Amino acid sequence: MLTVLTAILFLMGVIGIAIAISARGKLKLAKAPIKITNVNDRYQAYKATLKRQILSKKAFKKWEKSLKKEKKSADAANDTRKKRVYSLNFKGDLHAREVDSLREEITAILSVATEGDEVVIHLESPGGSVVGYGLAASQLERIRARNIRLTVSVDKIAASGGYKMACVADHLVTAPFAMIGSIGVVMGLPNFHRLLKKKDIDYELLTAGEYKRTLTLFGENTNAARQKDQEKLEDFHTLFKDHIASYRPQVDIDRVGNGDYWAAKRALEMGLVDELITSDDLLLSMNETADIYEVRYNPPKKIIEKLSESSSELIKDAVLSLWETIRTSWY
Image (cartoon, one colour):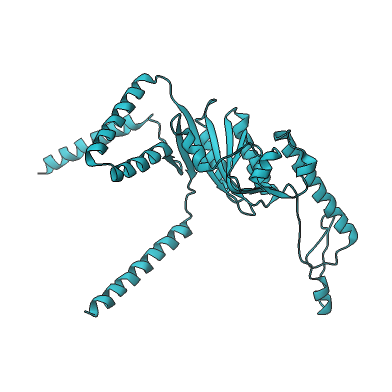
């Protein structure tokens, strides 16, 4: 018995060593937190579902058979790959937090995309942080720097920082009544100095450097401080207008750079956008001639988030179990 056991252990050891040796040198690929969805397949699934309902069984089978035959002949005839379109979504808030996901998605795409491919960004943003949206616009510039066509599609709004991003596009399309523009800079803050003074509360602020602090929340603001911040706003506004003019030289920047905004139909007349079309029709028009992939970054969850989800599930299960006990006791 002992001899048999020894032989088995020896054999297992040999197998383990063999597996380890064969595994050595093999490339171990980490799984990236990126979700890829084939949009063409999704459209085909929509069509098949509807066809199944509106056609007779015989007609549906005939259509399905012709579809397979068509695909087979197309694959045999097509020696070169179709154009690839990578579809991204950016829904920005005041702090442009979505830029963290956007930079990961663009990095992933640029690792495989080549000239002839296209990136489509579905953008929605009322604007916000100068720094945040400046970085977001720079991420889109990475695409153009690689000579990959960039299309930005706006269904609802691309204003201020949102338009700062959108204007980077080679081709900018919008739904007819989307809000476009607001090429301006704004700053505002409350001041509690008089309230503190009324309550006999002093606020001390020490700085080194003449302009380390200008307008403040609690100190007594001066005209000099206001003038300095106004100068900063004007400078940022000039940089903003220069950015727009560099990507859309056809616009009259003095006319559109006054902070106003327009419906896309009017924005088209002023050269702020290139075409009126919804994002749905844009992708649908590419369905027959391109392979379309939706790319979405799913950031790894933090431990506290996982624990929170687990706790929520436990509480949910406990409540459902209690409810089931109560419900069944009524019968």
